[in-house]
Image 1: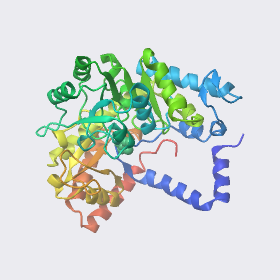
Image 2: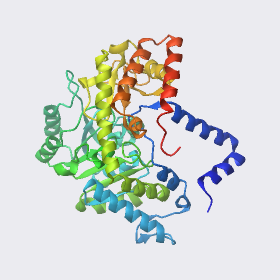
Image 3: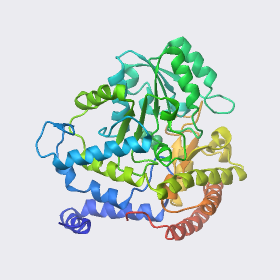
Image 4: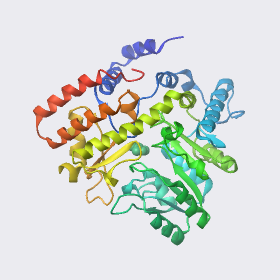
Length: 421
Ligand code: DSN
């Protein structure tokens, strides 16, 4: 059997351009601090599994019911992935085939609803996701999405307004979950609202799936939710992929919707890597990791606010914070992102609620702690990060300050090896 190193040697000989980019990306990941809340460093054994022979195999269908021969080992890994997902998320059924987040959510809408049906979901510009019915998305055109917004004063979800929207529009599905919202969800309220109008309940837990798995955040199934979707590469630290988790009575509709409804051959190398990730997720070490992500997030948010930064909702309950960079530093999000890039601190520009600016030049940035925590950073390190971020954004034109911080960041990063590199 060839080793991953042998395979990389072959890549270097066969394709020096791609090889150079791969080494460059490794170096970028090692010498910078990754603070995009949806990114992470996966486990070494996940990287190995992703680059394994499972990528060679077609496996349309489900374990025991495939359309191609030679499924002895693929059946085993898909069963492992499904069983582990059910254990980790305490649910009755798991489909681990969605290629990623968009397909995963589409499979739910298309499997449980009819085109034109109403779905109540969070508005993209208030923290929801593109696949939660943004008008530019195909799903936004196919279904009648009613989008709730956050409270204009404190920035959190206004449950009274959600209830009013539900009573007025009678959705068939009530969806909660977010991509840029720094607070926890009151599942009991969503469930009560959905029950009042006879709607199904769904959480898109993509951002915080790993924190639910690690017991650091609440699990929507404990509140009687019907469906939870999650990508597998964010706080869960697995390969890029998606899962639909649901109650037993929805299982057949979900499975048919994923295949043959939406997808063809599943990516078996990713499914094997999801199985590996879900084994990790059951360890004490992973539980500690999930708790530390939250402690780091709260420390970093406090560190920024102590330095007079303005955070949407005034803090965080989860792994992320949204900084209003216009109010804090008089910089738009693009300039803030680019300025932090110069000192090897990676964040992403972010539209904030009722943002007067356009998405490519919005008023904020998003910052999150899952990746930094995966490298072993703790509260004291978050204090240091807050100080660098604040100093850098208060001196956006000062090259000398940038050079000084960049040097400190690179030195600091050397103390925190990136898993798998
Ligand atoms: N792109 C992801 C995020 O950054 O939140 C969601 O798909």
